[in-house]
Image (cartoon, rainbow, N blue to C red; front, top):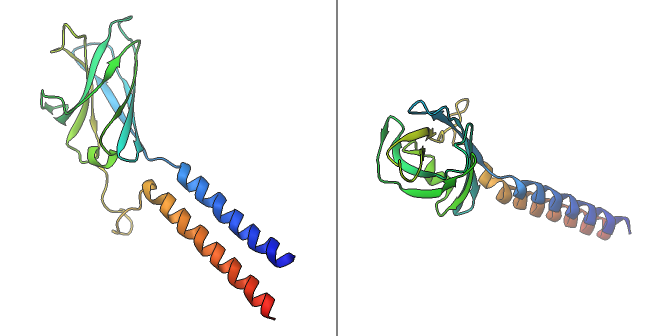
Length: 177
């Protein structure tokens, strides 16, 4: 009976580790700086969702109920391509949330910026912008590739499998003794 309980405990610990690792999501925060003396600044939070990315914008000093167009543009705030790459839902009352059909890793090249416009009628007036940072390709201390949180579910699954295999092996060994 002890052997079965030991194996079950190992399996449950592995499953728990896998569940915790799978719940981790990579998130990047982009600071949105004021432009055109708008008085508006804030953040955009980009969250990995497999082959998609959730973009959540929070801006200070919103202009009432005026919808403010927002986009992900190629380039940087200093050198923005005026053609948006990925449209975002309008910022209304300072907030917006959009799921775009692009993996977060594709946005972390250092070649994209998030831009918010004053209104649909004044689309050429930019009120806030933030450069999406490039993901560091290597860990500074080791020079080795950095393991992203997107790899945690795989690592957790392998760890669970190893724990189950060890538990089963110990159970079989004790059964033979």
